[in-house]
Length: 330
Image 1 (cartoon, rainbow, N blue to C red):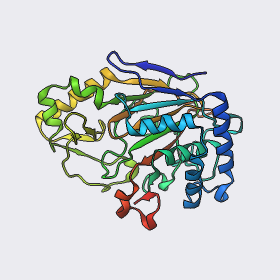
Image 2: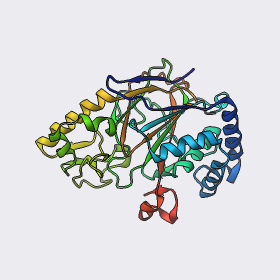
Image 3: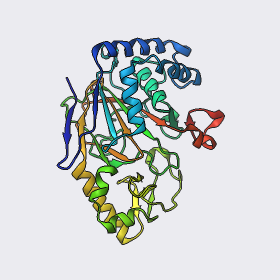
């Protein structure tokens, strides 16, 4: 079973790396060694230290691919790594409780943490799933229409935690179990592909501080700042991106029109990937947005199950937000 890629009409496919069987075995050996390290407590600094040390034991071909992506995420701003071990035979039923996270080490959690340490440092936000470093992305009964990871309707394009001054640099999603019909798709779109298609008027508006972004419901009322900000910032020829189409509001008419054009071009250039177990999608949250197609959960213990970890490439910048120099931002 392999991931299915569905590029939009003007999309450039994101690169994909398939881990060879002998390398997958090496990754599994490393991950199983981490399961018992530091009492197997995923959120402890000692366990993260062990994952950082384990990064050097990962296969050289995988480390090289991730190093290259970290340096330059390419036009698509996303990378698909296939064939990673997730220990499917040992998987329990897909969780269905609110705020589900992975507190104890597993093969899948160890893979996520080790790759995170290769890209930078794992990080989490305390208001979101109690600051767990490895979080379950699962459908929840009664949350079908929710614009977030617990929903199953179409999830709009967004920069992860677009409202926050220290947004993740990378978002990692590891598939443990696909949905029943294999129709749920991770959608990504990159400003590097959209920028040449934008009108001059929209580009000027998107570079102006004419937008405000609300925090997601998981952070609670009053989180973050409502200060106006631009959607595009940084180098004019290769800008960073900060937008959540469900939470970013334009403050002017030209900003509204620019946001509509941006959304249209996201749709034109988007790529959809139907993840299967062992697929790891890495999205550069600085230049790419992501979303999800709709699917129908059954709540029978075999629903779609991804695990998610955020990565910061420069942990020091968020020092004032992290107690005891840990990995969780308050």
